[in-house]
Image (cartoon, rainbow, N blue to C red):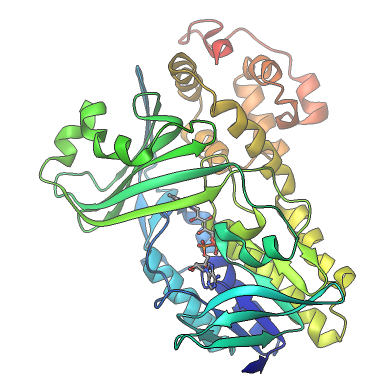
Length: 428
Ligand SMILES: Cc1cc2nc3c(=O)[nH]c(=O)nc-3n(C[C@H](O)[C@H](O)[C@H](O)COP(=O)(O)OP(=O)(O)OC[C@H]3O[C@@H](n4cnc5c(N)ncnc54)[C@H](O)[C@@H]3O)c2cc1C
């Protein structure tokens, strides 16, 4: 059987749903193929995010749980930031993804569930569709003018069509979604150190109604011998401060997932094919955050593809506007995040302790900006002038790119603030 569509999207995750909606908004016919039987299930993510960014994307506030306190633990340190007006949140994943699906459908897209995309159809070097196994086990060909690969970590079409290679570096995460009546729903924890998550970190993300996602993520191959699942099962023993909060808790769901952790992409387009979201390595490697990035990248991709088809020119040059817009929006910050990730993945316990000594010196707003991956010159000018010894730390770790050019040269390092031991930051 053969089905013709102007645009076929592979993957009904945040990138694919956002892309499908954006294509349909241009009045272009589009189908989204999803291999699972339900949008937003099973869950392969933790849902930590930022309220202002979700608001900017138009996500309704009933789809996330705001959290006012962020606590960082290293082997011998604890640093807490309090936000009377919460900045961070934990997403209701199934709720958000189904909301994005409804938006796509309302715009005119069709979603096909239990439909597994297999192989790109390539003619004269151009992707012209994809072979699919449908719900009844039939082989179907979907023919397209443009195919959007939003299949997440598998990047099944992009890799098979030669747009990119399989991911070689990635985070493997294992997580329980617990019913935990003693857990404080206003606290997120990020926990670092070799006993808890070598080359990675553990998290506790509350999502309301006594539910909390507790997970461990470990980077491969950086810590190849380590298994996140074993660390997860022992987390309350390995981090005794958590034990009272997890008393009487028990899992309601168990999730695992893979997050690509490589350099930002160079290419996202080839003839007839566009990749977006994790399939294009568009998330931030800083803390392994990709949902808001996937939604926005999917929207840019879908809009550009829809406009190109409406204009009758979907050549790589026309589709390349998507790459340009994405790079202008994200590339600089994501490159910096990637450099930091490569550094901190190798941190020893002592370096994590010193890292938290440095973190402690930031204001809550500064800490939030950095964790969000906002490395704009304005933020750094502010940081460097308030914490001059940061300049030395950043230079030491070859993170010059973080520094605002002219302003950094003018910001002469001053003695460290008296409440912190001189040079404390330099050991990070
Ligand atoms: C353990 C873990 C924790 C994370 N925690 C966070 C977090 O706290 N905050 C955050 O922002 N990000 C987090 N991320 C990252 C985030 O989940 C991803 O960046 C995001 O889901 C990417 O969206 P996507 O649409 O590109 O891909 P996905 O969400 O992976 O969606 C891809 C979709 O494509 C479908 N699909 C795949 N192959 C096929 C096929 N052949 N045919 C049809 N359909 C197919 C899949 O079923 C899926 O629905 C985490 C990731 C992991 C692994």
